[in-house]
Each structure stands twice: as C-alpha cells, then as structure tokens.
Amino acid sequence: MLKSLQATDSPLSNTQKQLDILSNGIFKDGSLDTFAAKIKKTNQFPLRPKKIEILQINVGYMCNQVCAHCHVDAGPDRKEIMTVETMQQILDVLKTTEVTTLDLTGGAPEMNPNFRWFVEEASKIGVKDFIVRSNLTIIRANKKYYDLPEFFKKHNIHVVSSMPHWTKGKTDIQRGDGVFDKSIKALQELNAVGYGMPGSGLKLDLVYNPSGAFLPGDQLSLEKDFKKALKEDFDIQFHNLFAITNLPISRFLDYLIASDNYEDYMYSLVEAYNPAAVANVMCTNTVSVSWDGWLYDCDFNQMLDLKVASKSKHISSFNEAELKDRNIIISQHCYGCTAGAGSSCQGVVA
Amino acid sequence: MEKTYYDPADLKKFGKIVEWSEDLGNSFFEYYGKVFQEGSLSAREKSLIALAVSHAVQCPYCIDAYTGDGLKRGITKEEMMEAVHVTAAIKGGAALVHGVQMMNKYNKLSM
Image (cartoon, rainbow over all chains, first blue to last red; front, side):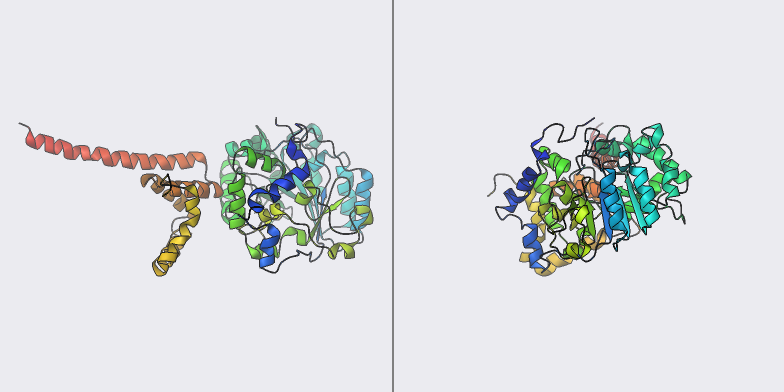
C-alpha cells in the first residue's frame, strides 16, 4: 500500500511548497494567466460568496485506502480526527444557520469513532440533504462496518461514493488493489437496502475522477456508460454520476510532477477555462470545516491550509454574516473547478 | 526551420489555420464539430473510429488527440488497442490483397 506524502516526508507535504509550485514557473513567466488575472478579465474578481448553503465537514484524514490522486493525502497513517467537542460546536452552528446541506467527508468519515453519534445528533436537528462521502470499501473493511447501509438508511443519508471506472483495472490503479471488487460488493449491499433504486428516496450517487492526467469527459455521457456497464455486469443501480476534475494539489500534484505531466495538465485546465463556471463554483455556497474546526472556502483550500479571509476563522466563532462578507482565497488550483463544464463536489456547475 | 517536423505544441495551434483562410478554416471546424456530435453513431464510437483512422493516416497529432479524448470518455486501453488492430488488419489486408494482383500478373506472364 502507498504511504501518505506526510508519512514519507515528501516536500509536498509542506503546503507552502505546493503553493510555490502553483505560483511560479509557467504562471510567473507569463506563459499562462494566474487565476486572479483570468477572472479579472471577466470582472469576476474578487470572488465572493453568495450564501452559505453547504457545510462540508472533514471529520478526519484517516482512511482505509491510499488513493493515488487523493487531494487530502489521506490514509491509515493519518491520525487527524475530529473530536466530540468540535462536532458539538458544529451542531450548535447548525441550529442557527441557513445551511441546507451537511456534507461529511474525510478520509473515510466512518472511521471517526464518533461518526455515528454525530450523524444521529445532526439528524435530530434536521438537514434537508445530509451527505456522507463513503469510499464504499469501508463497508466491507471490518465487521463493525457491515451494518453501515442500514445505518445510512435509518438516518436517510445521501450516500456519495467514488468510482473512477466500471472496470477493475482502471479502478484499482487509482484506488488500490482489490478496491473494485469490494466497491462492487458494497454497492450491491446498498442497493439491497434500497439505495440507488429507481424512485427510491435513498439517494446513491457516484463520483468519477479521471485516473490520470486528463480532464473528465461529458458527465451525462459518462453516467450513461457507467449505468449500462454496472447494471449489465453487476446488476447495480445508482442515481447520478458526478464528474469531478482532479485538482493539482497534494498527491495528485505529486503524481503530475513525477510523471512529467504538470505543465501540460495546467495548460489543459487553463485552455478549458469557462467563465460561466466561475459564477457557480462551490466556494460561493460552501464553507469547509477541518477536523480541528478551522474554516476554509473549500476542501481544497483546507488541504493547502488557506483559511478563510474573515474574522470568523473557526467553528467556535462561526458568524454567518461575517463569512458572507469575505473574499474567497484563490490560487492556480482553482482552474480545476472552472474547466469545461466546471467541477464541484456536486459535479458540473455550468 | 524546426529541427523536427512534428512539435506536440503545434496541436494546440491547429485553430490558427483559420488566420490564413478564414472562410475555409471556419467551415472546416464547423463541419468537424458536427461530425463528432452524437448521431446514429455515438460520440464514443466516433472517437474510437477517429483513433483507428489516426493510426491509418499515421498522424501523431491525431493519435495524441484521440487517445486523450478516449481517456476522457472512459474508453479502456483494451478497446483502444482493439481499434488499432482493426487499422492493422485493414492496412495489412490492403497490402496482402494486392498479392492477388501479383499472382494474376505472374500467372499471365508465366508458361
């Protein structure tokens, strides 16, 4: 199994090093516009939030998988885990905000020892759309997780799971040996309790990330191909496919540099820049909360340690009005969310 | 002149051909775009055909473009290689079928 950048003491485990790479070279010598320069041309600078509809909570970086593209640099060797105290602070905020979507991510969120307590308590408050980003294999990783499909069903959780391809080879090369078979089994178990079935209120969506240095194709076409293949080969059904672009940070940045694809990838992101996508990028309606309670414009900024440009920087001092009155922090990685039809944790945006 | 005939960076400049012949260039790209839309054949099937033809015409720009296009569409390496074998079979067959012409000529001239 791979190790995290942090465990291998990679230079890229230093977020400043990543930001330096993204700000120098082709973006310094004028070959490509910086993201700020690009959005200035369409009068979209500074980027400002519209409202806070989604609270995305990263409950910890621990994961049972080590995916080659992971922007979190998650893995079994990561020990950052959200405490009950921080969870309680989030619950307190939830009671007072206009947030309609709670989006739990990680790592594998289910590995946080207080995950189930948090889900139960947040469910009591009532959230319109309660998402858990499950990597699927966690459901088959250990007996204590076998009942997760029933637990999700009990709390009407909207399950969003990664699946880079409908074939074993392309899935395992990105997510690790054996991941495809376990994911298929987990999807069948989710289907068995009603998730993903036509007309079912139990939402099961899949996330597609390209397994390499290329951008995702058309989301609807990919969804059609995924649905056909998974139904024919494994009798699996799901609702929607979200095609998400890999952002050039963390482990994916490491891969881009090591495979000599970094510059070409950045050129393709910039060439595919779509001003229409800028208006709907997820940082305009999302606040991301880290395992230790800090606030960020998105999960990617969290991984680059770019805290929100607001007096309200921590969940303990969450102030919706202050947060709505902030400028969103941007760098060249933001091109990943504005390429083509755009990209967000909810798929395309334009 | 460049020291090599092909530069990968030139693929990105393809659109510049319009600058020296605007009407013809624009007409070509409009036609090109329509050809690759979903039709009786899916855009995915057309991408594989384009990849096979790229090998037949041995165009490095086209191979570059349609390998990337196939990856974006989720086309597997096995599907891509089968498409290239179709090219090889047709090109090989095209050479070999001329063997009949050779045989005809041989037989005509021989006692």
